[in-house]
Length: 78
Image 1 (cartoon, one colour):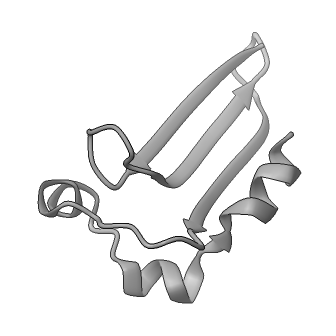
Image 2: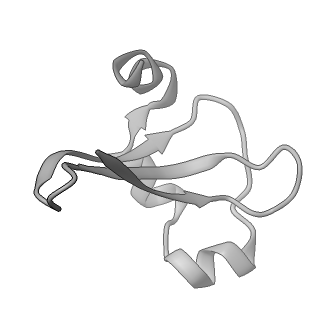
């Protein structure tokens, strides 16, 4: 099996946070075994740097409306 992992973050500096996590788990023959694509609505104050927002298009407004609570989803992923 192999894993393809993708993240989108609020920036590239220490203290920036993950905004989106996606993965696909594939069998050795390439068939998809499982996948997850989740956006995080962080419970603390954070900034999405302009450069990052230009790349991925994720906004705080979007995350407040569609994002999962970060603390809750981490438990599910374990």
